[in-house]
Image (tube, rainbow, N blue to C red; front, top):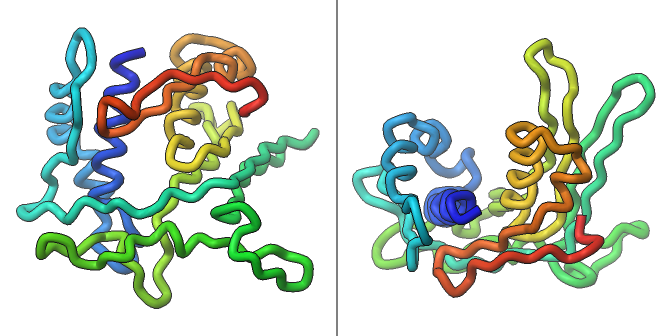
Length: 210
């Protein structure tokens, strides 16, 4: 469990530093998934215990600024598979309680602009998630479908939980794929809420959360 928590903390540090709308910034995906880089990050995971604090790795000559933008809440998720094998994984969020507070034709508009960083330059470095016209804010929503080797549907999942969503989804995938648990057994495993600082990492398993 400690190793899982550390891997998620390292990934979150990179996400905070590098994630943003790829139509506005250089897409960091290939560099973050580079095998050499992943080995460097994995080497930071201690065999026993956990790190005090973690920080983003270096994938560019100059690392972008640390982004401390607000992580929205009030998210819901549905996973549906019908009798013919059609499936949907849909995560939706209004951002905060009652979203923007504006209704249009009975629909509540979200407050996702709060997910932007309002400081475009920090310490002389451009923030990837800085607010710009026409730009999509960074989000942690993770609607997921797992497919088998023949393209067959194996698992449909997702979760609410703001910035913790990727960890909840990963926990369930590990339980099903690596530990051969049923979907419900994997969901019932304790959730690890993780932060890049040691005092923000804890285990939690609220009933009815998934």
